[in-house]
Length: 76
Ligand code: FES
Image (cartoon, rainbow, N blue to C red; front, side, top):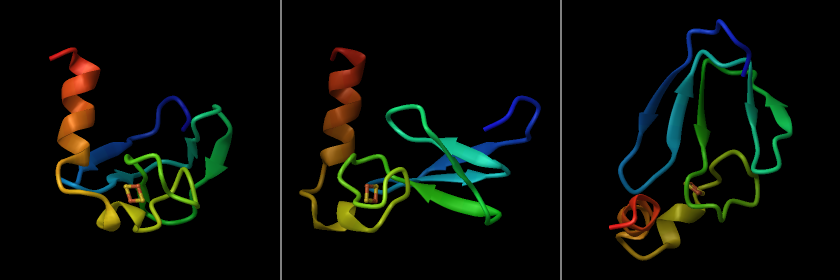
């Protein structure tokens, strides 16, 4: 993701982060991956085999995986 890009993100409940307008997106190690589509789905569950992209693995996770992570991240 470059400075000055008009990047917009939308969190899909129990799913990925939708990213619009980015030219690249970093993985967990900071490596930038080129974006070649107007909208891409970025994994939030950290279990995708195509990271940083969502591969649908989140659909097999127990309901609430994303809300539990959010609560743990915020310290509540
Ligand atoms: S959010 Fe879809 S595989 Fe992680």
